[in-house]
Image 1 (cartoon, helix red, strand yellow):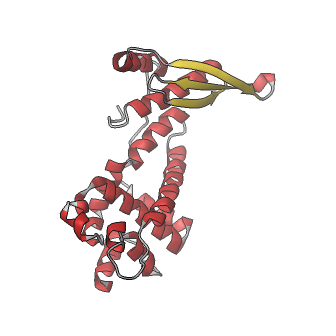
Image 2 (cartoon, one colour):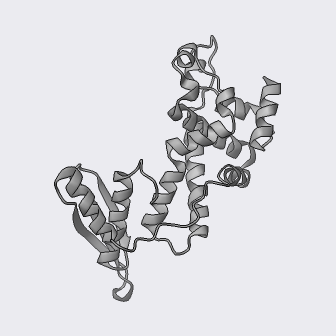
Image 3 (cartoon, helix red, strand yellow):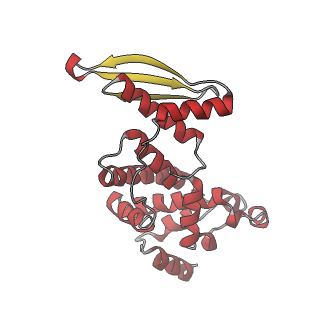
Length: 234
């Protein structure tokens, strides 16, 4: 197993000072539950890695796309860190070959299940963070996402987000979304408007903007991202 870990570390271009973190990241709960003695699975590292990943990706998008607004950045980030994307990276790094799975999970094809691979990818990120700190985790994430960043953010030219959202909700729910001004803050010359958007399915989104229109547009962009989660960026 030490030799296998050595090969995996070479493949992911990170060498652990404490290999036990990597071992834990590769341990699925199904395998841990089959052991005679208590063994830690990768769920806690998955939780940690998810937070580190979101922060690193958010920071990079903030730097790359200085002209993008919150809704556009949120949309790009959600596509980069969604289950399918993380599972693809896990396969590219051959992480699926090193997972420790229980007999039942193995028999049911868990080694190739996207949800399981995405969780393992987040756990490995958490392990790198635990082993080397934020700087190493950030470098690791930048390496594995090197060819994943979009060239640009989407620019809405023909239709605004509110109009597009209204079309989508009318087609899907036969109803329109509703917008409620929930408050304002700041001095008169720099007032910030706070808006709550409600979709017909009960999902709601909060947003802020320097004008009521901008706050509503950002909220609509978030709602569109939610409704088109499995679609491409365009």
